[in-house]
Image 1: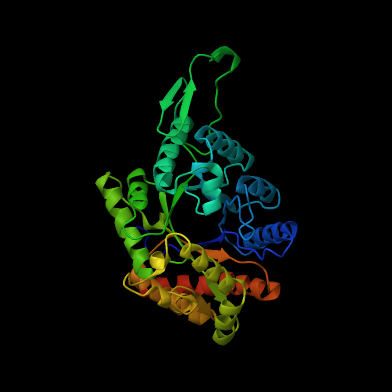
Image 2: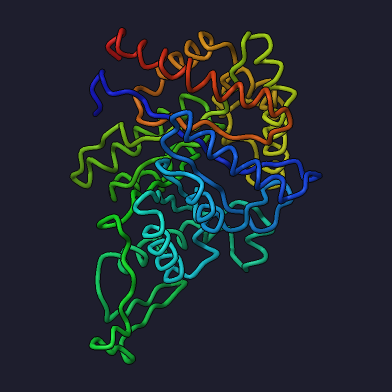
Length: 370
């Protein structure tokens, strides 16, 4: 548990969601510029999503993108959120992430989870009902490769790893690269749903919970409760400093401007896109504060009122403190990145968030003894 003098850190999550009419190269150039600006403004971590068949979410392999970003930055930690494990052989994931950890000189973060784009799953022949089991199996295999030496004889339900017959130890054949960070880079696990089995397992394994940006504050509180139960049942002492909460945030000079921009810029368009996407899949229930809320009421107006944080710096601090009345303390506030459809407004938002909001929020927390 962090003490009252421990500041909340701040990071950024790039899904990404871009205007599909914008050339992909322009999207990537702007995203790389965003990472550089985030580091300059004191963001401690930056996360990049993985999607294989979406014109809106158009970063296919975040590890390649991160490799380029490493050469443009010096201190900010970088990671894929998540590595979509059901699309990749666990041995490939283990090797490429260990390699990237060395290239980063230990600046790599890791987030393991399932993918969500339905055509990605169709393309890879993944049954959505098996995604959770595939992720769990893959994590266990990756950890085995990272923390033990061959021979390996691992027979899973979905994958097999056999390294036995061809070992030549004196020639280094069969030696698999381990991460630079020992025993492995920090591991986060994404969580959306109430009473998530995944976040309970994360608590048992002492991985870091990473809460979704569109769930209500009372659901966030449930995330920590379930995580804490899992940790304590496994004999771990859970540390709230390891909890990441992501939020959609727009800061402007006035609250009126911020609320208008949150609705009319890429932030509002992103939320509408996600609502339409889940309408064709699991439905809107995961975004509701009250599960009995009619789907028609779980719309952009509701999200802007309940989940989106928008205002001038003082108003944003007030909304974050109100959120924390339900969630309690956490370690890192992860701001969601959106397409630069109004570049000047988004850059000013970043500056106000880093230079005004976070210092004021941390001072308030110290003053209140929160």
